[in-house]
Length: 174
Image 1 (tube, one colour):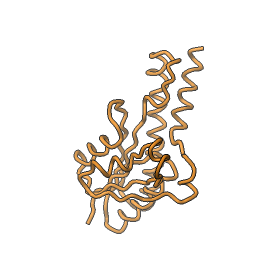
Image 2: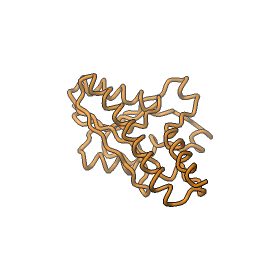
Image 3: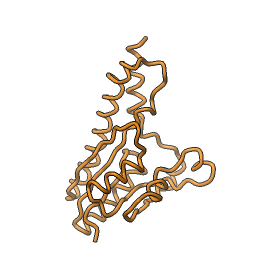
Image 4: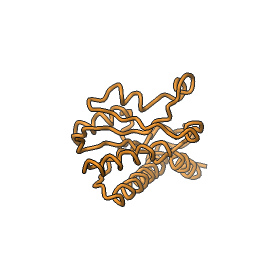
């Protein structure tokens, strides 16, 4: 039924649940996976670092962290016997939902599988929902995989590597 499954993946426990479900589906259907990770370049910009330090130090470290996250997800999927490739998005003008929509079109995905916290009310208002934006703009079916209650209660920050990268770059400016 589905042959090309796109999985937005940030290495968090929530996105790992989405990846687990995508691996199960791909195994059952003989499908391929594409993992998409987006580095949020402006997420760690403090304004205290120089532009050169940010561009030369922080952004490359964020790309390395993103590639590592993708590689770890790819290894998990391939150990399960699922053909998998990856795509790293580092465009600061593109949101995740736009990047996913672009990948659906260019790669020819016929299903998107994404982990979601399932937040409601103020939590969703304050933190937003990438999953919701993807559902609203998707041109193919989307499977939302709810996080476990334990991980839904905690706010996970998969960008720890990006924050570490910013701290590293800031050490050069002082």
